[in-house]
Image (cartoon, rainbow, N blue to C red; front, top):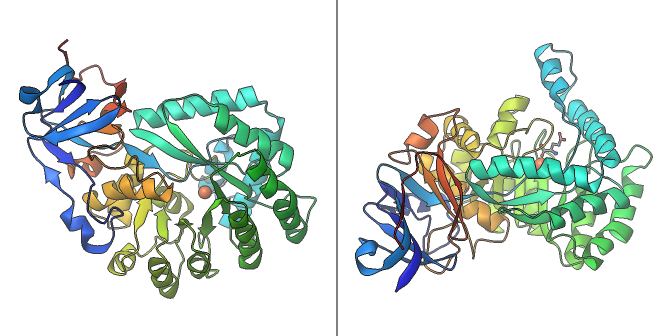
Length: 418
Ligand code: NIG
Ligand code: FE
């Protein structure tokens, strides 16, 4: 048989494939780390994993991965991709200590970005997004979730969701409607919630503009009561659910996430132990954002407790114009290891297979398995523990999306055969 590509002989191949699919608790110990193992790809799909595949199959192209680590390419399961209006002044204010509380800064910051985004055309927003996506691809990310939320009225939320839909890029984007990101200046939280439920969410469904609905549940933003109303209405409109909870304070958001049975509950920095246990029981995935926690100087979540209680964990950049202006998944993994005390293998699984399940695409991507999409990352690292050890630089050697090389460093070793 002739195949399109063989990925040959990496030092370590991390498949992130286990019988239970989503990885939790002690499962991390069983993740296969294979030596001398190749991957064969045809028509964008992984068709065989095994030793010396170049001896039994003819390949059009072989990538020699000696000395490198190969794993599924990253999935970024929580991004606020579409906006204009960056906020570098917030960093300077933080250094000068001329800023208020995190909640005040975030509230003012979101408003600033909303006013800039409302003034931008679809074309401008698309061009900004493509630059960000190009950087993400270099970071080894090949699928993302992207939220709206810097429009806060139907005209502008629709504009943002249409931009997400119309972007043509190698990275696959799962769209999320997050009109409930903040409260517009001229409305009460209750009135805006009514508009979200009666007008915006039904329109999202009508025009098929999103797969998920998300709410920023926090003091000063959406209360648990309003968040629940919004997400119940989203569910009735066939949207899957996500929620930002317990990021700046404990509002019992984890408990609410479990009650609603959301696909993922994100941040969880201040969540209670009872809430975490309830989430694990309800099969909710916890999405953690350690670079944001570091930047905001808030409390790091208790990951040891989460793992002991079998909560599946995904990691994300939470790319946004506030505390999250970085496309680097390597940086997220670095902070996950150092500050959340995750082992490198745990952080890497959380940024691949578990992140894929947090976007509801785990059946297609996130692990290296026969019949899954060939979305693969080759890293300049002799073993996986080296990845967070060599920090602050981009270690990507090559990125493969649907079997095609979409990013490659100059020194990558590609052999053209046919
Ligand atoms: O996930 N928490 C709410 N939203 C973003 C921040 C948005 C912003 O600062 O513009 C987050 O951290
Ligand atoms: Fe967010």
